[in-house]
Length: 74
Length: 284
Image (cartoon, rainbow over all chains, first blue to last red; front, side, top):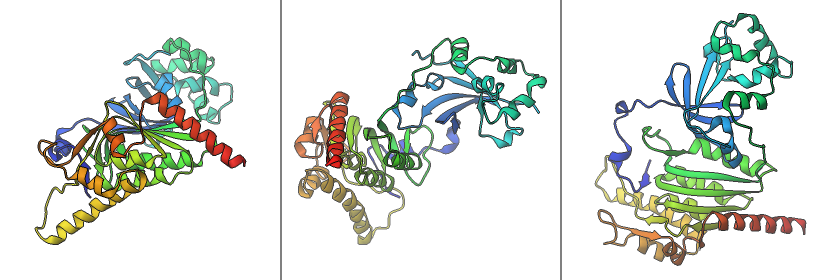
């Protein structure tokens, strides 16, 4: 693999153990989102993955929105 | 529409086990399921009498999702306007075979390629705008994205904003027409090799071949010729710790890499003109 970039490799390839940031991808209501895990049941919208510009206007999934997931009881 | 960073929404997982997710069923859809309009109504109704969590009480509301959105979040729904122009934002590093550490902002191959296929295949989409602000990245992934864009039958216009460096250059030129913002920059420099290098002539030959792939793609898809491109690439004295050239806005157009200096307005107008031209050609 050849990496063709302006940035120095030491900036890009840091020790993975130094990073505690947890990002997860989930699909909710047809929206493909990158979420940052805050705690066991809540995430924060980090990024929207879409080519449709209208998806970025969706009021529920604006970056920064906190999403709480609750497991339904049996 | 207003955006409140830090606002909260709640989603209830109707799957019986945590291990089963996704799908998650958003809270606002459960109101509809009570009326039996949704296929997952069974799962939702089985929980009706057993609400233990205080947050689950909200689900009993028999209101429309739009009304619920106003009540819960204090905002109205955006009218679902359909866009005939889709937008691909290429930001940060272009990620290929290795997952980059999370402090890097990346554009991932596995996201972009299926999106390009979807844009090409979807009859509702007429054209695509590629917006670049990238510092480069994986050669293979970058060239793959560039080749995909170049082979699309739908009109594609690219716009370099901020920067389109290194492997961003082939992606910028892969569009049918390219724009660069007046202040945006493009850095043309040679490929570098890091890690273990075997000091034999074959190493250089291999590197030269990799270099040729980028040079060939750029020269085939823009007005610049190979001699000029290599000259820019190997120029000394411009970059402090490296060799190469920084092209700012108009310089990139004069060098023949980019077609025109412009912004979003010009890019969208050009894309619409190309769409109209293509439709006209099809009608004849």
